[in-house]
Length: 448
Ligand code: TTP
Ligand code: MG
Ligand code: MG
Image (cartoon, rainbow, N blue to C red; front, top):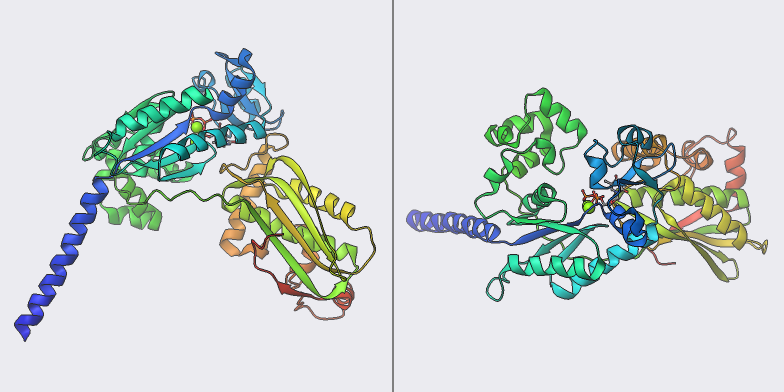
């Protein structure tokens, strides 16, 4: 009996062990390509304005704005994305500074997406100009590297945009390889060579090592990836927690994350039905502001931008009206609140009781960037980043715009109409509540 148990245990153990070996072998057998367009915004702007070719170009906001994209000519002078325009101008005075055209960037990104989707079965669109493609298994029919090379040539030919790629057994190493080989180039890191390839690079090159982590690692005397490779993983964990373990794994060329098939999210929206129909315009505006803030936070958390905003109202007789407008791509509350208020004012003119209101953002694109080329300044970007950090740490409702504040900070939840604050001080809320409590909370993403 004991013997049988031991045999079963050993078999389980062996199976697990064999599974691990098989999965490690399978992981190292993968053929993953990371493709990224070179100085994407600049390249599209150059297609539209060929006079910009071979000139140092910066795409960015006005005098107080930041650099969204910069050509390789300007990078030699130390210019980089997210740098204040004023500083970029000081470093590279001859740079031509242009305002961006998000519609053009978005449509060119779609063109590249289309070419890739026609030619490969499994790919992930990870940002406005980046794609991961899984070529695993293609070898038998066609060399994966050769296939990736032809795909890159096809993109360049059909769109006129320069693009680079890195290929390896995992996403991290491929992404680092793309960055190493840019611009307008390609490279392959063979299976088993990952650690050697990463070792001489700065730790800053490991995706997820940002400014702060880099400073911390530097203060520990870590500059090259090789040093992280030689450190015990426990040390990285003690200093940086879970992130430390991830950085250690990536530095050692370990990244089992799969290429996630691309599903485009077309819109995000939220709407609320009042318990009692209302005509309190002020209150509805405040709720719309709170809704917009909430959706904007989601946009930024998912690293998206919207180019179309819609407001919906349903009157007490169930007549439903929506109005929408196209806007430059953004994820900023202050910009979107302005449009939402304007749309609401245009839409609500019948002076009838309202039963439901809603906000929807569509024409979403990934991008991961919070920069609105037309109006953002460094201060605004810093402000949003600080607000979002607080929301992530303490909860979404812990920081809000003053206009929506009358609801939340005093304990009023604009999404369920409940107020925890003592009556008396709450004349306004009491009045509002008398007008009609907000009742149901439709799940986010309900289509308008
Ligand atoms: P990236 O691929 O990071 O940069 P890039 O394409 O300009 O340059 P590279 O050759 O190094 O890949 O970003 C893609 C586009 O996203 C970029 O052209 C402009 C935009 N962007 C911003 O708007 N803000 C930012 O902070 C960054 C990094 C990029
Ligand atoms: Mg790029
Ligand atoms: Mg990119």
